[in-house]
Image (cartoon, rainbow, N blue to C red; front, side):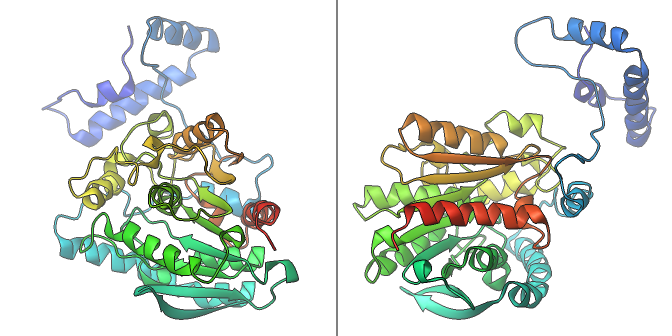
Length: 375
């Protein structure tokens, strides 16, 4: 029986360099792909004759073109980010990586604010550093509504202004006033600091706003925190938001779920859980079980959750996280919409303000909120 290409790559070849071994493996794989379909079908049928793991030939996947904008195609085709396999060993090394990525994100903030017509103000709410993002024009129906934003970044990336792009897009495309929570993060502040900060803001906002006019949203880590905030608010007997939008949520922080395998090395944003992502998961958890529902909300009880809209892409490493969350919500009797974009890797629907899919995604979320938030 033919073994998977990963087994071939793990063979010890003392007389051949690693590069040569990789080249030999790829040559064999490409020769197999060049075989006729009938031959390939026989090989694959034999390799998958038993129950259990699926074995597939090594293959390349071109950019999707149908129903995908040129702007999105450009993102889908980019190489892996240089930090995908970063392995910081010390707090100082983590901070250097975090600061380097933050500077890149902050550089684009002024142009984004101008393009989408929003203003940003720094403030503190319940002692937590936050940003208030306000569109220049707020429609009558949105004037008493307020959105709480918890940013993504694997619980380590996105400090300060670097966390603002998603909040700016939601305010600009949706016409909502947004509070973006600049929660504390590792390496200095592991779990539960981020959740404590987000909940402190939620409690303070409830003092001056009706829950029927409030929603919580965020992507990736922010999506997981959105779900966990609802779990924790319910456990603490606090009012729940009228609706939530956890985009491609990191609902299971461990490497559990089909797309962690099927989209590994296909997703050109996260790439693999075994790179910086899994290292950040362990750094954040700091010894707490990865199945704690406030860390991996997929293990919580979703009964009674507010209406929810989820967003993902077909190449997203977190596609299974998103799908599992959607199914669990539906099984709990919760109203839950699921939008999956063709060809997109993790959270690419919010990475280019000029991509039509970006405006479409945030407009869909805005319409969803408009349906369930009281004016």
